[in-house]
Length: 251
Ligand code: FPP
Image (spheres, rainbow, N blue to C red):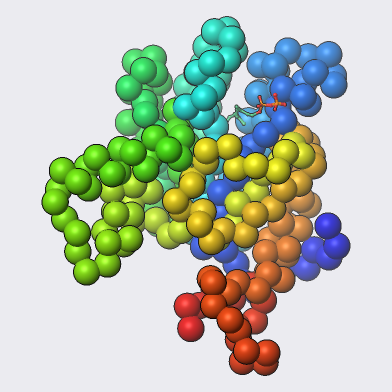
């Protein structure tokens, strides 16, 4: 990816979403277990949260466990749940210190009780923090989200003058801006049922490194890449009259 200068604040995405892929392959390449790959992935997650918070990104959403991940071997799923429990406990004080609000999206009903309790406690403890909103998607699927929103929307009978905006208010991401920049690591070029509605106009960046290998260098390059995009939102921009690359104003 050519170039990696620091973007100006106008060109900074308000909402970055990350599909943190490649923990398993990272581990396999080193003769380690998949769970060791996820532990290394947690280190990369820590780096990424600090980095985006320091850059001033307002919302960061991380895909940590999908609806489809339930189909993984039982021991891997259990190890992931244990990792989430210990990570929430270990990281919460620093998140609060940095002014970061932590929330979770997804269907948590079938999670172990101790994980559900930690998730709720963390949401309550960090509520009201305003420096950054960190959203962790656990048991999340984009289709699940649209379906649960549709059910509640229909039940409400609320159409409103702007149905798309009204409907967005029923998604698990209600109140958050749409995704501006979606990054997927690990070399695959698909969005795998992540924030389907919310990423309608996201800039999609697919990079090769496995998640545990992703450092602030790749993340900085990602922001610089985003800053060079010209976002048109379906409109035609007259040459010389349109927004500068990376500018997200709706003008
Ligand atoms: C995808 O890699 C990664 C996951 C399903 C788990 C993500 C979890 C973490 C990064 C750790 C902690 C995160 C938080 C927010 C507490 P994969 O297993 O699909 O890798 P592969 O494609 O190489 O098999």
